[in-house]
Amino acid sequence: MENQHVGIYVHIPFCASRCTYCDFCSTANRRDLIPRYQAAVLRHMQEFAPRMENCLVDTVYFGGGTPSWYGAGNLIRLFSAMKKHFRVLVDSEVTLEANPDSVYLPELKELRRAGFNRISIGAQSANDAILRFLNRRHSWSQVPEAVAAAREAGFQNVSLDLMYGLPAQSREDWSDTLGRAMELNPEHLSCYGLKIEEGTPLWQYRNSPNIPDDDLQADLYLYAVDTLASAGYAQYEISNFARRGYASRHNLKYWQLKDYAGFGASAASLMNRRRYTCLPDAEAYISAVESGAPLLSEMEDISLYEQASEYIMLGLRTTSGISGRELEERWRVPFAPLEKLLQGYVRMGFAKQVDGRWRFTPQGFLVSNQLIGELLDAQAETRYRSK
Image (cartoon, rainbow, N blue to C red; front, side):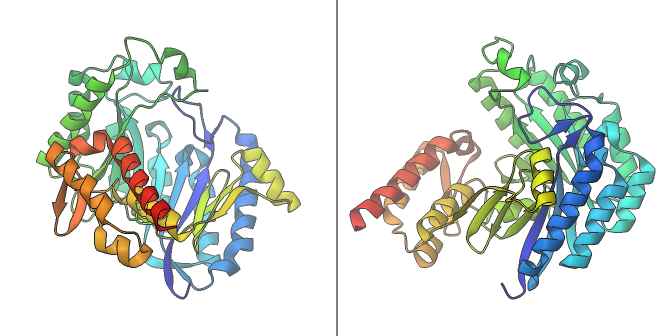
């Protein structure tokens, strides 16, 4: 991997409390675990460093959980160790996730001085009643305060996370949330549709009439696409919109099959065509690092065929789409059967071809799981016939 550009992800599985929809690897109100977790991640990075001695790190992402609740001092120490053990480029994109209730100007200034240059703030909704139902600890009034603090600290790349399809959320609610978010002039917006996952507190409400149905979710999504486009936010992935030059460089690595290394509980890595994931529990991860026991929950080598499948699946999540020539030259997959399907999607308004690349339209993104499944079936059939 001589001078290969890679990303680094660090998972911070700590929160003040757990949201009703959350099924991520997170632990609520366990500050007692933080010192051991910090030591475990530091040790993990140090032990892994020799495998990346020829890599150049150009994106770093601290996700969670709630990294801002973890504390600026801890984050800075992790980043300092990262710069010691890895070749982190000076112009790297360095992101931390934050919640509005745990954003403080002095800490933001410390983070900015240390090299953090992008912040993603979990705003979710401008409706305080919905925020309370979701067990969010902040009100909307704290969102503009958090953005103002980030600006004063020197962050010139601010992203807001928003959610649609929330309980009792109307189109008027969603329009209000988008309008208030755009008034704050963020460089980037992520708009996620609510998914009610089994095992979360919200699961008991999955059949409630107060949960927006698929038609309303689709309406809210298409409204966001049109509204953000008119305000200068270009859609570059199903859920992500940015002003020119502000697409998340780190997240693009995932969608473009670039290499990245993950540290911390549940963190995933893709290195040298091998994918592996750390244990999805903070205490189990800590114990494994401390004892020298295996800390991976899974590991697999990605075959050429699987890489082609992921190229299709992930590429079609983005507005850059996929190229038939790339598919045939890089992975030796016949494109004709897929092209036939894509031409049909064009006629249905689900896809279009731009400069030789195939991509979904916003209407296609709404049914992308089904369309991608059909394309992967066509790829599999081609493979079967070639045997």
